[in-house]
Amino acid sequence: MVSKKSLLIISLLLLCIFIFVGCSPSNQVPEEETDPNKIIVWVNETTKIYHKLTCRYIPEEKGPNWRRLTKKEASLDGYSSCKHCKP
Image (cartoon, rainbow, N blue to C red):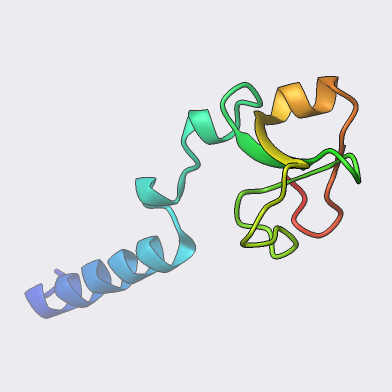
């Protein structure tokens, strides 16, 4: 027979494993973040490169050569993806 103390320890260990392995639903990527029709990127019309909104190569003050498109639009318009942020 297993004691209550042993069951509690096993339960806590399983809970810790579950949390640290990342099996919680909060770690799943929402569908809209993987759909190229919904992902918004910054494109630079001079360099013909598109970036994630959080890319370090996007200047704070954007000139007229910067605009926002969906990832699909940027790709169809012939822009290449940034090699650093990999959108």
